[in-house]
Amino acid sequence: MAGEQQGVGQVEAQRAHFAEPLILRSGGVIPEYDLVYETYGTLNAARSNAILVCHALSGHHHVAGHYADQPENIGWWDNIVGPGRPLDTDRFFIVGVNNLGGCHGSTGPSTINPATGKPWGADFPIVAVIDWVKSQARLADLLGIETWAAVVGGSLGGMQALRWTITFPERVRHALVIAAAPKLSAQNIAFNDVARQAILTDPDFHGGHYYEHGTRPIRGLRLARMLGHITYLSDDQMGEKFGRELRHGSFSFDFDVEFEIESYLRYQGDKFAGYFDANTYLLMTKALDYFDPAREVNGDLVATLARSKAGFLVVSFTTDWRFSPARSKEIVHALVACGRDVSYAEIDLNFGHDSFLMADPHYHGVVGAYLAHIPL
Amino acid sequence: MTDHLSRPDFAVIAGWVEPGHRILDLGCGDGSLLKLLIATKGVRGWGIEIDDANVLAAMRQGINIIQGNLENGLAGFADRAFDLVVLSRTLQTVRHTEVVLAEMLRVGREAVVSFPNFAYWKNRQAVLNGRMPVSEDLPYEWYDSPNLRFFAIPDFEALAAKMGLDIRERRVLDEKGRLVTEEPNFLGSLAVYRLSRSR
Image 1 (tube, rainbow over the protein chains, first blue to last red):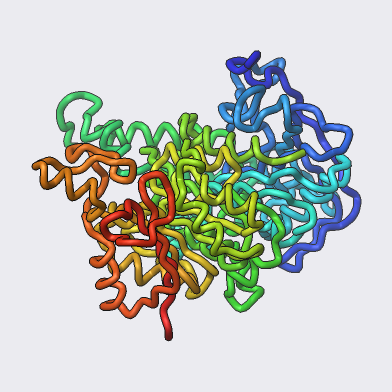
Image 2: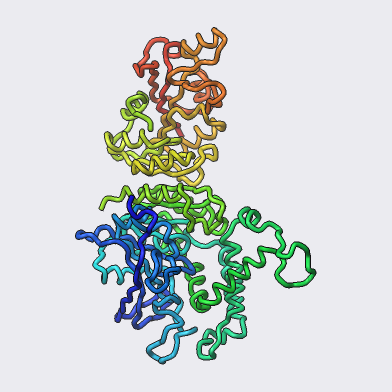
């Protein structure tokens, strides 16, 4: 197909302002807010071809393409979005949005709190997945999208897709829930808390008001990312990629970087800490921890998902131990139990949790085949 | 792709379902049976399949396809979640025969099982001639066969009796898909059973 190699090309971020307060799951209120978003493809006359792509912990609205002035800044899921790609922009109108509390342009801890004229910092209220979904629904209203053809997401993004089907059953025709879980396990929460503790105990954190001190808790954020990164990869892949390779060929008997895996993790940590906001990281991990839509129905996932009216594609990856295939199967079995249309693919890929971002032909074939069957 | 016209057991199974029935097809391949039952009988269908290429093919047909391994049982599916659980021409490839049969009648009100009859006369003739049989319903050479179990109609019925499964209906077909009424274990190439379990 023409343009298959090209992707969506040059894109521009847009900004929407919402003046109506958003009352949050935590009881907090955001009096007004901005969401930055991008769109690819064309909304059809019937407004029936819109797909929302929800991002994971460190993602944002820049899903695909590149900016005119930043040709190297390619969207985080560019490999799946574009003409002839699984999220086919010849057929669908794709929307990517930076979630509330984020640090890529939407209102979040690093933006100015109109009440104080200073960055929100630690005063930014805790946001939950349901709050994101409600804010995304307002964006859909603004764009004239009554019903999404599909809501798509991996990891925390998949949880948003799932939440959409429960909170707005009439507004989602299909949900693609990839590398996700119906709720976090104790181990998942434990990893998140160690990451948070790294940030919270950094002397540069200043109770979350580090902006005013002209500093950032870079050491904590770096550690948080290093830890997170370990959980995104598989043991096998790490072994294949790094093994016990030494940077200088022999032991140096000190605490500098010796093993290649150390070098890799430190690089990833430094890179991330250079641009990501620590308060956003805290918020995102809490949103993950709190996610448990069945909690409001006495823990009954079947009864919870029985509210949904969507068709589902659930995808997991064999080497993902952060949100393992067994967690995806919990969702699948609950959906079957309440009689929903659901397909499930368990993709044999070696990249652990990060597999969902990879351009594997079978994985993309499954997503493309599912989406191709959605009538518009 | 399986051509359902070449699958006479599909027509038998279609005769045992009602509109709105919830059907689970185990080892559903590319989903052809479910597609047929949805189109002609208006059932709700889900299939289980282990093979990547089949999962993709079923998805291309718009069938509810759940990737998984039958040998691990149907853990996670609720008791009596389905009206009918189908195992079409797959029992002979299953290692944990009793587990799979028991699981089918745990999650389903009824089960349909079809399998090639090893005691079909042409198969007997092949063995008498000193060779393993290759036929319409046993289409593999011994070295590339997915089949692990070779059994005949009375063998299956003995197992059903041992497991306390009720045989509600049985259809035996010849190689051309015609119904066999006389000497089924001699003249029948494929057996199709409708089972339930009194509880």
